[in-house]
Image (cartoon, rainbow, N blue to C red; front, side):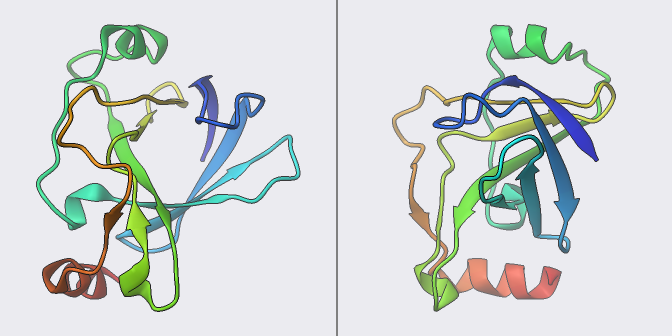
Length: 132
């Protein structure tokens, strides 16, 4: 599905449209449409852990979010070999509104959120393997 970027992906401010493709139940691929830059591997954070945050009011307005909005949440994952050395950015989620095909990335203002949390925990690996 193609989404309009309403709040840019950090470091990729020129990207205005992206395509989100599911790989499996855990992973997806986000590909910028108008620039020849590599895509991003995304992970559904809920397959890894309990994950919650407040959506900032500016993001709610940009994505026209209502209580009934159909939202998706993903996090950028940097894959390494072996996968146990891969890291996830939980601090800056990507939020997609499926209803109006808009998306935004924002920073969660909580000190306990990490920009590089390892996938190395055995429980996480087992959850991912079950989803793939």
